[in-house]
Image 1: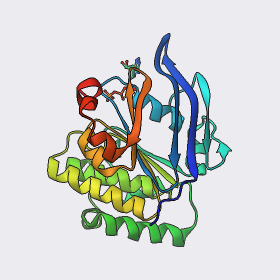
Image 2 (image 1 turned 120 degrees about the vertical axis):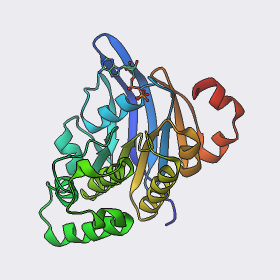
Image 3 (image 1 turned 90 degrees about the vertical axis):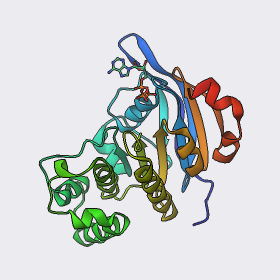
Length: 239
Ligand code: ATP
């Protein structure tokens, strides 16, 4: 699919704190429709806090967010309704629900039976392993399968924007490659992706553009391919 340049997510001067300590400070960035945008940075840079502010899990202390041309409110349920899904750090699947039940949680706000069935078939096509294991409890899946389930659950809401927090964390390199390939297919089929990652090389190879965060600020922005060539990037900001 050809990438268009209309903006789907616009973040203006966003700040957030824990008590008196600012975790993100005056962050502004854009995501265009159809893009994969990576948000990189070392531990504590503020990446997860940023996603939590966008998903409504953490309160913003300042700033505006516009999604799909309209202001994006802070409440979680409205965010899902508006077309944003988050795949949280650590997967957070339901261990005592089956794979299929976990997937149904992802579409609990929908009532279009045919559309839900269509999306179920799509996620099984993306992750055949999940179809094989649809009756198994989430807690019995391997780490890679749980990550697949978390992504598939996010897709079951049929989002316009899928935000992922560290999907490669704790996974074997071969599984990380599979996950990155799947994210590429998801973007190619029209879902915009905002990817928070510590695995900078994998993320830069996948994304169209990336922003680099350091102690709560965005300090660099460029295409993935240009940042891959930037020798100072790893040394200065990505450990
Ligand atoms: P990591 O990759 O390690 O998750 P990150 O870039 O996602 O790092 P955040 O988790 O957003 O960074 O943390 C940003 C800052 O906010 C850090 O200084 C961190 O210690 C602090 N912080 C994060 N969560 C909390 C919390 N619940 N209470 C207090 N401080 C927090």
